[in-house]
Image 1 (spheres, rainbow, N blue to C red):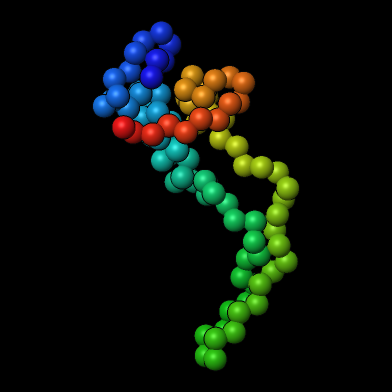
Image 2 (cartoon, one colour):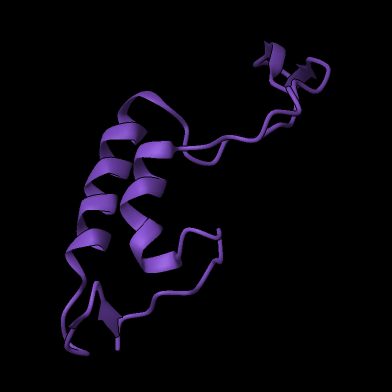
Length: 88
């Protein structure tokens, strides 16, 4: 892999990916990185197990993480091209 004109050895993880992982870890402390748009529990009864769900809470707004994206942009390209990064 070549990143910013520098060759990254096959056995090395690019520093941009490491920084993005650290940023994602920080984001995960306050935010669900993969929110579920399904309904939340409205009421729960323990004996005889009864659960009532609220209506779906899908805001329709996709979740984005610009700080993480900016760290990965050099690896993915600014055109938004998504590539799979794997460790050899």
